[in-house]
Figure 1: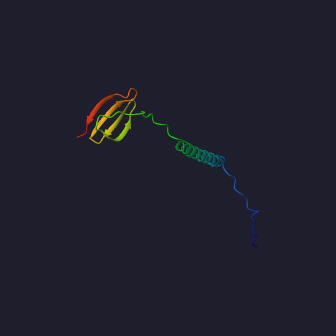
Figure 2: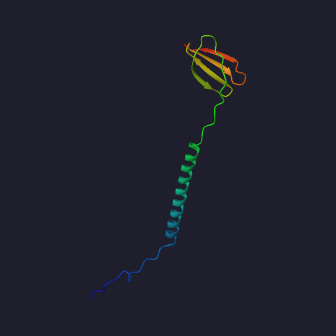
Figure 3: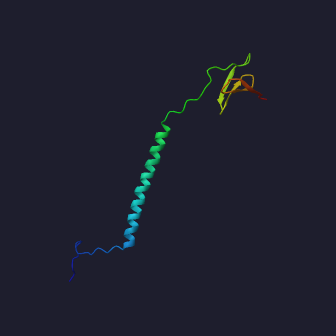
Amino acid sequence: MTKDRRLDDIETPIEPANLRFLRRLVTVLTVIMIGGVVTVVSLLVIRLNEAPAPLPLPQQVTLPDGAAATAFTVGSDWFAVVTEGDEILIYDQVTGTLRQTIAIE
């Protein structure tokens, strides 16, 4: 005689305590990891959407006679103008005076 076994009759095995601890630990770590990724992505979006700080550009630059500017760059306390005559003119950012002229060969 065969006895029909129903799902209700099947005994569920008892889960060891260390396995239960590991399952909870993995769940907690997964939630923390998801929260960390969301935080990093949101901070990146916030930082990348900010307007950049304005550059402190001089109001006017007096170039030598016959010089025409082709490029401009700013350093910590200087700015430079590259001219069509293959020269780099380095000016003081505070006073606007010419510091150095470098010929490009």
